[in-house]
Image 1 (cartoon, rainbow, N blue to C red):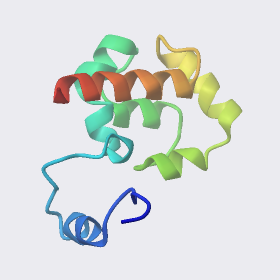
Image 2: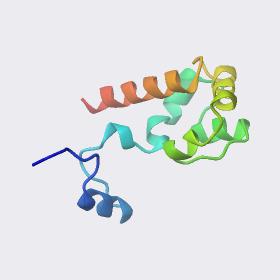
Image 3: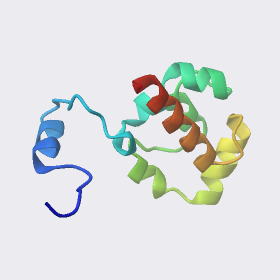
Length: 103
């Protein structure tokens, strides 16, 4: 059948309509699910991802928007406000913890 695509048209359509697919793609998890309040409380000085972003004067709702933030600035904010040395370490841990809860 060819290559496996990250998201089918039907899945995209369902997501746009607000109907979540039963099987979540770990690479496409909403930020508030990856960085839920318990995760933020455990790994940072703040109690929510929104508060974390606000404290650094950053605005982003998706991983794509975060990738538009200058790496050095965001990494410094992560190092200052969390137990992680940089954004990638924080993201990797959140993805791992999220996938562990799904299994």
